[in-house]
Structures are given as C-alpha cells and as structure tokens.
Amino acid sequence: METNFKIKSLNHTEFLGYFELTDLELEKIGAIRMTVDKFPGFPCRVSLEDAQIGEEVILLPYSHHKTTSPYQASGPIFIRKKATTATFETNQIPQMLNHRLLSLRGYDKNGMMKEASVVEGNTLKESIIKTFENEKIEYIHIHNARPGCYNCLVERA
Image 1 (cartoon, rainbow, N blue to C red):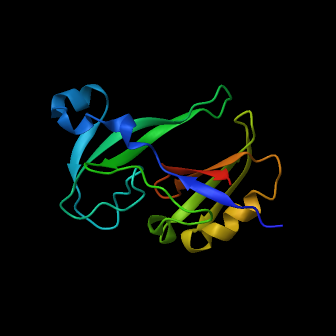
Image 2: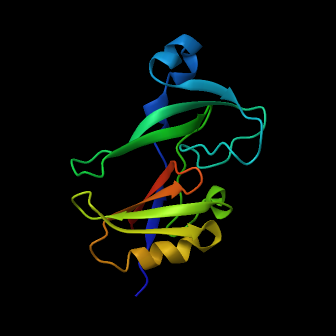
Image 3: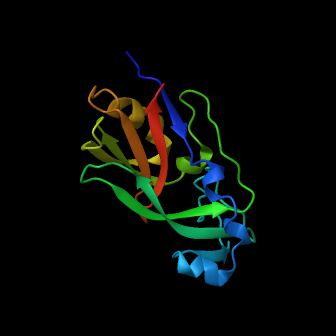
C-alpha cells in the first residue's frame, strides 16, 4: 500500500522583519544579505522556489531539527524577501527539488535517524514513498546533497 505524504516549507512568519535589519544587525546574528547572481542556486526554504537573478535574499543559520536526540541540527538557509509559506497538495513535489541531488533523512518519533539515502530529485516521490515503507519513520528531512543544506520537511498525510 502506497503511503501518502505532504511536503512542508518553513513558515514565513518566522522571518518577519529580517529584511528590515541593517547589514550590521544581520552580521550579529550570523546572517548576510545577498543578491542572486545565478539561477538556479538560491533555493528559498519558505517558498520552496529558486530565487530569480537580481532578487534579494538573506542567508542565515537555522535550527531545522529541534529535537533532544543527538540528531538535533542547524545549518544555513536562504529566504526570499517577499516569500510566503508554500503549501502543497498530498504527494506533490515542489519543482525546485526536481533538478537537485537530494539527501533524505528519515527520523522516528524520538528524532533518531533510522534511514538515509541520496537520490536524484526526479525520483523524489518514489524515494519518499519507499522511505515511509519503514513504519518507524515518522518524518523525513530533505537536504540538498551538494551543498548539504536543509530544504524541507515531509510528513505522512
């Protein structure tokens, strides 16, 4: 039986006010403002779209796996200036993920990694379904495999 899933982006309300900060204020929190100079290459974790050339983005540290397990994690993410939280239908894959090499990390209810794989984006749907065949997997984190930054969360639907 095929498992349904939903991909979840980061909520834009977490980042309200970041674009009003000065460069010095951003620096104090380990973030920088950038102008996109290639496409694709600046994947927004709120819209789950690649930012367009000339668009303003902020690169900032983000705690994406808030767990008490040894697998708690943070890393750099891009956010676009006027991005709003993306929503996806059941089993829908964001186009941004189709052309990337991706790392899937499957976690149990205690935040312990139980499975990991590297897949081509064009096989992502099948790979998510295969990962969820392991009944211990509660959720999956999708990362870019090169460089290996966090992209989004996948939950059972």
